Image 1 (cartoon, rainbow, N blue to C red):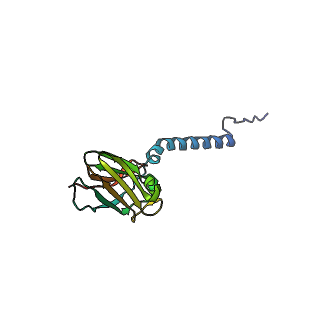
Image 2 (image 1 turned 90 degrees about the vertical axis):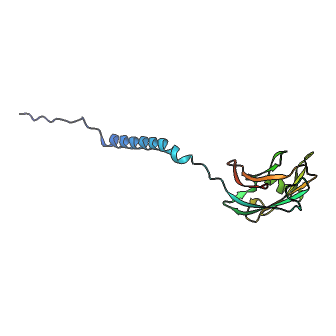
Image 3 (image 1 turned 90 degrees about the horizontal axis):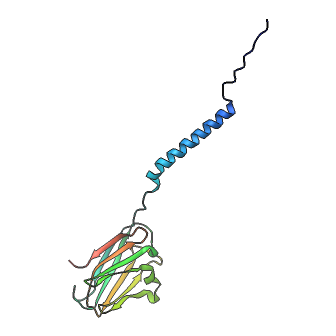
Length: 171
């Protein structure tokens, strides 16, 4: 009698099986990353914070005269480039003026006239570590020919467009 040998060709070869397992694993990992990546990858950068103190050097407080204010930075949470800092000054009822702190530092003598008009003049002078806002930085605001007065000063982080610190000068 003749012996019959049956060949079983219904299984997948080991090489094809390995390739299929790797392909399934990569596809699954990519799917999980796509779904969960949006939960972790898009977290916003925290805005730096600063503690500031303003001293009114004027002889009369909150009057429409020439005045001088010194803003002292007492604390900064992160290393902040002055290129990323915008100063916002509210002048009584005449408007809000914004300017880059870097432009003040780069001005001749470290002082710059922010505005010059019928409401008076505002000159700003920066002193501190070159290029960075630190806890030893100070900004001097000098008003002349004032028809208005400074009522609020804010430091704004340009990258997040949020306030780092602000002070109201009118109670």
